[in-house]
Image 1 (cartoon, one colour):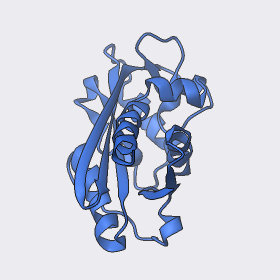
Image 2 (cartoon, rainbow, N blue to C red):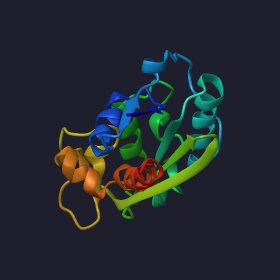
Image 3 (tube, rainbow, N blue to C red):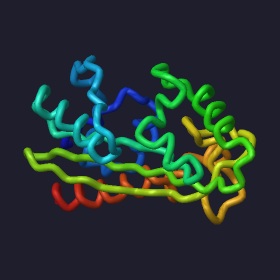
Length: 194
């Protein structure tokens, strides 16, 4: 098995990605490699943030790795929260506070179109690759569902009458931003290790 590090501490993300990977690949977390550093996220865009995190792990721990950055971009808010999605309401990464602030900022807004946008940056054998995925939809007025994490209870994907938080992990992975980016990553890795 080929070990690859997913540069995240978010166990929800690891749980979401693990079942999608080939059995030739052993997914490791930052804890598995003894990394307790706070990964840098100082770039103004989602693609640059993903690359920044992957480069940090690759340079400091000398392991093949991938990092992911995701943002929720709401049209009426000029793309906010975007790169600040996880810390929209402050540095605590508090999902409830983030959702409350989003709903407050959208109060009275008719245009609630939004998209989730993910970029995965992979560094393998010293070469950098990026994979993107997006899910378009809208922000509903009240939370629905208790699956998933982050803004999932507020995000209704296009063509569905349920939020991401009302879907099983399998249903969400099939249509989500992260699921689409991970599929591209997996296709690449399967070819790389075939």
